[in-house]
Length: 281
Image (cartoon, rainbow, N blue to C red):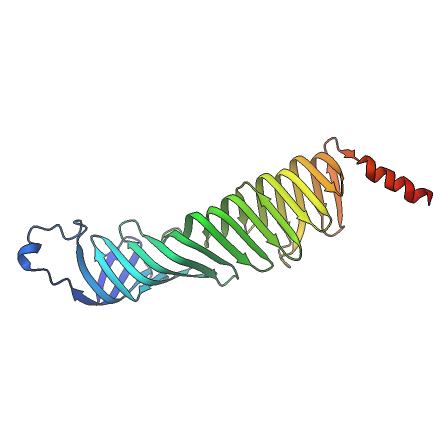
């Protein structure tokens, strides 16, 4: 076992080593920590990060590993991040532990799950041991209770309980609501708020809503939708007719929507004609 002390943490490495069998004369003059050449192989690898008081902060392991310079290349990576009130598990086909930066690069079938009930899947990501933040610039899928979100690029922070999808966002909410936007989508779990930005389109069984920005507020107890606020070029379409306003506020408790800022109603002539026929019948 090798124990390495570092500022703010204690690193404990365990592994079974295989030498690279390189002749001594070939190794002469190599900068062992910075050459980038393969130094050691391990049949297994485990490392724990602890606080100055000894509390476990994260755990990282792999079925096999290769040490190259200051980086450790892992296969079948498994990691756990311990927060104040949550635990996050990470897995990937491969990973690179960058000791100097305190980061882990995850590659292939990356899956992140929390005991809070959400799962994040992508093909590559970067995990910071210091900030407990995972980030990616490729397609990402996030699922949780009653929802599924897809977007390109984003991040999630288990300590701050915040998440973001950068662009081309599509969210499905049970039972039958679809929300799309150019992005970003920003979620603050502590504040119980999700904010969709740019070219927002909402569709459900009652019709469609378009806006520049959509703020969804959730009830902190039930975690169900409480209020929705649409802002900027708001258009609500029902059939062929629609309303236009600067702002619209929907409250779940009253099942009603309030239009604010010079609202206008545009009624399709065909629908108006049908309405008149119903009134005369």
